[in-house]
Image 1 (tube, rainbow, N blue to C red):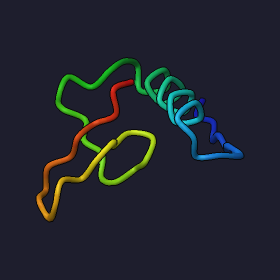
Image 2 (spheres, rainbow, N blue to C red):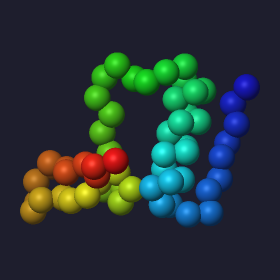
Image 3 (tube, rainbow, N blue to C red):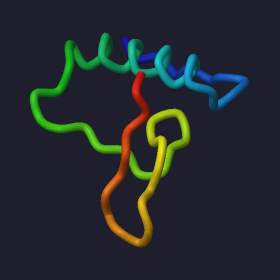
Length: 58
């Protein structure tokens, strides 16, 4: 059974809670690399005009 979750904020706590739920529904953590675009809860910095991202420590 799949459920949708709605969060009142886009903060890091909601980001983590959503990931825990998604990984539970998917049956575990992906074995490949997970990448994020410019989501503030996941990305600490986008250096210049590169495609590189500095992920948030948590």
